[in-house]
Length: 354
Image 1 (cartoon, rainbow, N blue to C red):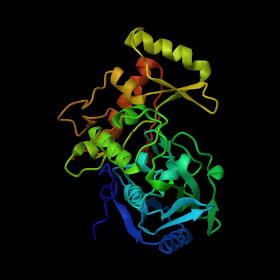
Image 2 (cartoon, helix red, strand yellow; image 1 turned 90 degrees about the vertical axis):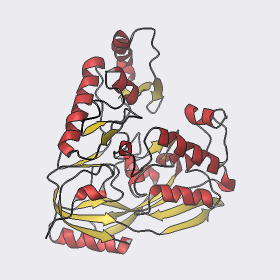
Image 3 (cartoon, rainbow, N blue to C red; image 1 turned 30 degrees about the vertical axis):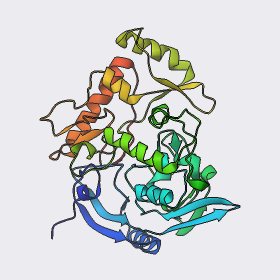
Image 4 (tube, rainbow, N blue to C red; image 1 turned 45 degrees about the horizontal axis):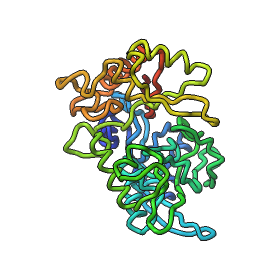
């Protein structure tokens, strides 16, 4: 019997075989499957939408549990609307439904691939909004205690592309609850590119449906909306996080960057950290200024940077995970050599490392 191939479950379309794949169509089935495999002492890989995974060519020597739960409920707490969705609900479908139901709040997160359960793990964010801004609660299955537990945002140590659920498999997200805005009004616009596209200023709101369509258009222009006909979307989204430099190191780092790009060049930088004294740099800008242009290293390469956005590493259809890792290392090390800034990968690595 042929082993199932994990590549079929990931947006990168990479990854070798698994021993078996078990589909869990409800939280009960998910808990039962995990308990059964834990009792057997099996190492388990849990996959939702597979949009943030880099899996080795050798695959995974154990069972894969794929979350496919699909429940969605809208409610109100002290007059404030919210939506609660099972972990297996496709994220963008949830955003679309919330907008169609007349609510705002999630529209800036439109087009992000993957499942709802993954969003608090990574504290996903785009166009000025993070999950931390809208999160009401998260239900997790504690594999050690065999219990379902409700967590608040304060329990998760949420930060830039981080939670205390990340890179750990002892607690599996089973349900996510998110605050919404009534009247179809968007969250205040906090991202300049989006505000300009909507002919608004930062801080203003807009119709949530219009914001959603504008965000989708911007993401498509960068190859960040899944499209089977476009290999630029065979990716894990942004492969590297935007680096954050401490306040103590920022002057030296900016000086080194200026030596390379020239003192007259404006360096994109944003306040970061709890008090805003740290500095966030643009990973995409650094990658391009280090000599890695869109489409690098060229048409014949099995893996290359997206032709639309330098932050995405794309499988052109015939790549291996080894090919992907080689390019990722080249880019990471090239940026480090040029600017003294070490880029951190965003995806989760399974049986491989950068």
